[in-house]
Every structure is written in C-alpha cells, then in structure tokens.
Length: 244
View 1 (spheres, rainbow, N blue to C red):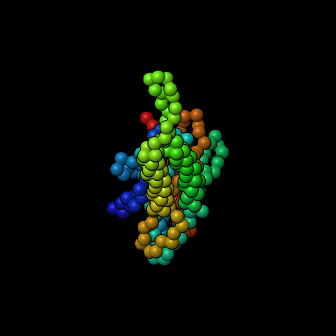
View 2: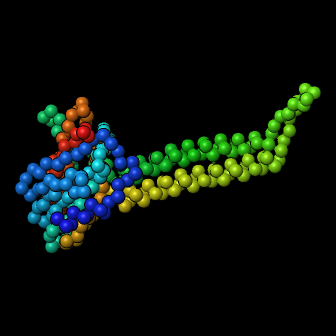
View 3: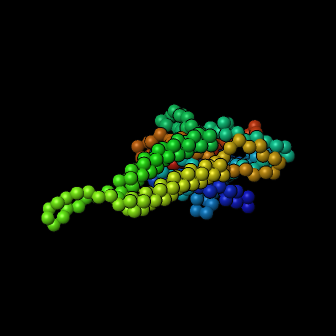
C-alpha cells in the first residue's frame, strides 16, 4: 500500500474546498478494500492487470455541488493500457431506478473557465471605464465667495494626478484578472484527469469531476463510479451523506 502516495499528485482546485457533505465507500467484492488515508475515506480496487485508488478531493463536499474525486491508476500488466475519460461512468441509485451522473471533462471545465474569464473581463472593463470617466471629471470644481458670488474652476494638475492614478488602478485590475485566469487554467491542466496510456508499472492520476447527484431530501445519496482501465472495469460504490 506504499503506492497510496499517488494521491499527492493532485492539488485540489480553488473552489473545490467546501462544506456540507461527506463521502464513504463500500467494498463490493474481495478485490476491493475500503480504508482511511490521512483522515479521509478511500477505496482500493485491484484486478489482474490494474489497480485503482479513489478518494474525495476534499474533506467535505458542497451540498448539491459537484463531487470531485482524486483517482490514482496503476498498470500492473506488462503491456501498455489505455485509460479514457469517455469510458468513465457514474450512475445514481434513486428509489429503485438508476440515473446517469455526467462526467465533467477537462475540456468542459476549460470552457467554463473561459466563460468565467469573459465575464470577469466584462466586469473589469466596466470598472475601468468608470474609473477613467471619474478621472476625466477630476480637476473641475466650484466655489462660492464670502460675498455670495459662485463659479467654477479647473485644475490641470489635479486632473493629471487623478488620470494617472486611474491608469495605474486600471492596469492593476486588468493584470489581476489575467493572472487569475492563467492560474486557473494552469491548475486545471495540472489537476484534472485526462485520457492517458499507461506504460507497464506506470501510475497516473488526477481529479474526476461529476455532475451533482439528485438531492434526496437531506438523506444519503448512493451512486457508483465505473472506471475502465484497458478491458477491466472497477466499480466503486459511493455514499454521500450530510456531514455530522
């Protein structure tokens, strides 16, 4: 079990850390073992040519949010084997019926991040425009003399200072927006599991994002995750319940 250190391969994305529900696993056959790793539930599933380890990506999941798991895969065979995200299945059991839980792929997450970046850019642009407009009005003022005479004035120096400050603030806002987007994209690239060919003895791992299971009125939600490695199917039984 020393290879359980595969979990250290994957950093949890910002936003995955949340509260509300916890996960437990049930070993469904003699080739599986439910255990604890660093205070978190995990499951090991071993077949002839492959070994799969699964644990939640955070100690608690957001209620009604996407469950995220860290998956580690080891090729035990002497031949290369393929792992394809498109072959991963997740099915929720509800009142005797089964419902598919969509696997949220790396490509989907990247598109979501791009959409978020577009929205952030629009908001940043509006804020920068408001800053620039406010600065363009700087230097203008009004006065009233003791005798009651009133008028307006314009200070070029005050206008230049305000416009320079606005330019610096706008540049910082835009740079922060771009940096956040780049950091989020890099985190997705590093953390999320993708299609991969595993060479003999090789480990591979990453985050597996699923669509939220259907709410059960605050009760436990049960579902299976089927992870196919080569021709072998690892069926993982999951129970997701409100945190105590």
